[in-house]
Image 1 (tube, one colour):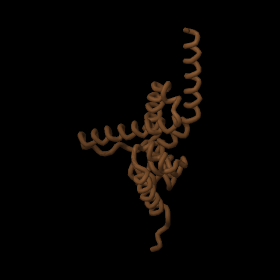
Image 2: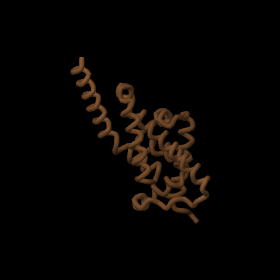
Image 3: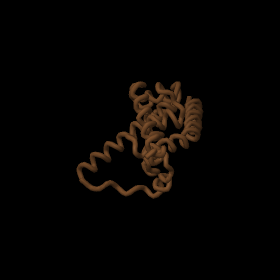
Image 4: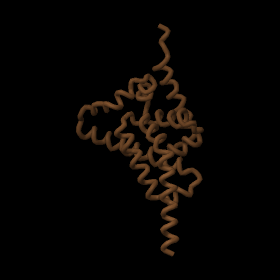
Length: 169
């Protein structure tokens, strides 16, 4: 019995490690675009993978463990965002200075346009445009209705066009 259990744990650990290695770069890139900060993105990714690892016996057998991972990461990001807003309201301090690495990444015009969007619009754009999720998949990952995703993507695209297209004045 003990040997069988050890083999099962080893196989489960190997499955998670494969999952981690294949999904971490995409998740980090998504969270970097959503948060605008390499530090915050790394924190969210670590927290999400830790939570998935804790539940890997259930998550690994799901039809879409990647969707669960993204949902976990998005929930962690929203929680961190809410904590930050509450702390800022309590202290009335100016916003923190931008992350130097994010400033380098932020030189790209599309990243600036993404930064001007609401967090939900950015999330919807990243999931549908960058990762190719359809609205139903993005809605499940974000925990909202597909119609809401379509509205967020439409507004996000309009914001991108407004920031990236030249004015005809």
